[in-house]
Image (cartoon, rainbow, N blue to C red; front, side, top):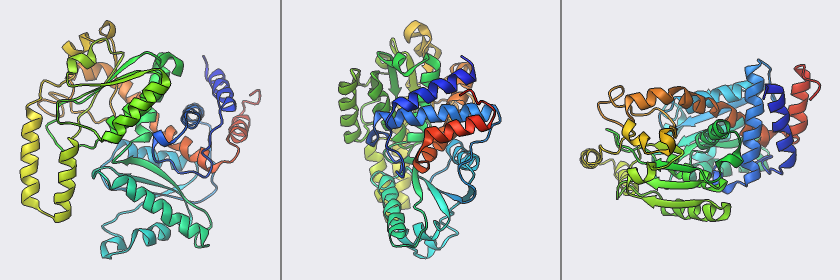
Amino acid sequence: MNNKDKIKSCLLELERLQPELYEKDFLLTWENSLDNLKAIMATAEILQMLHWEKKPFKIFDYGLAVSIFRDNSTRTRFSFASAVNALGLAMAELDEVKSQIAHGETVRETANMISFLTEVIGIRDDMYPGEGHSYMLEVAQAVNDGFQNGVLAQRPMIVNLQSDLDHPTQCLADLLKLKSYFGDLNQLRGKKIAMSWAYSPSYGKPLSVPQGIINLMSRFGMDVVLAYPEGYDLLPETIDIAKSFAEQSGGSFRITHSMIDAFTDADIVYPKSWAPLNVMQERTRLLREKNQQALQELEKQCLAENARHQDWECTEEMMKLTRNGNALYEHCLPADISGVSCPKGEVEKSVFERYRIHTYQEAGYKPFIIAAMIFLSKVKNPIFNLKSYIKYNGTSEL
């Protein structure tokens, strides 16, 4: 199918859907309808095809996008910057150390001060259970207050660029890769995906990717298997949601403490390290107390516990267990690659190299997922606008 036919197909899909994203934030996939999620993916596909043909899709003549990163980032930081630039916004990143936040400025005040000409605020706050999502809600309420009381001429949209609960831009990019790879969302029904913990020589990695994956893939009729060594639990409420979605979609969800069990006959594998929930909660408490000695001891204990599970690695032997020995490998990147980024890690070098381009393509959907989220939140009649961009760019037969 050529790009013109793909665009037609995506537009027809959008016309069948009834998304409710206009003037809405995007914080959690599981708080959004299937129509919302499908509309974001269809719009992202159109925007990506326009980009590949060097055709613009600006919706803003001026304005600002602000990012707040409370954790390190490469892919998401540059994906957000790319998305807002393509839509016509200038980019500014809030440095909390160099701002007046360091002098006690409140969240409510900061949110309003950065928003006078701001159309969208992207936030990453993923390291501390119970805090990241709450912070995003606090920022959202602050800009609501500013807009409703005439301080702000427009209400900025809030985009979750990874919280303690979910990583929606990443997980939707992962899903869009699956849609492209298998041909259609309907083709995902009955496919087995293994969301598996994998060994890492570091500790303290967020839980939001595995939580996001199990709660998104379970909505599309997939057989979702969550695998981890005992003790590496996720938030209980995210497990309950995944079970409910699997039942509604006709798929399945289960937990195993065997990587071999998870990989056996899997169509997709997603080996990714994360920290145990109780460790992240304890780490948060010690950071609040500024107890450096206890933090160092906790890190030693966690690294020692991780080292007990070095056999949880995505190796060539593990891949042979998958369906026809040819499951698709997914990862949010950067992966801990054995013999490359670390002596022993999440994935064997030869496995990663075989799927490297697939993971780059997977990451390449993220700027367009973010752009689509903003587009659908800011444009009242998205189909009309998309058609006008396509016609303006010389595809009038659409």
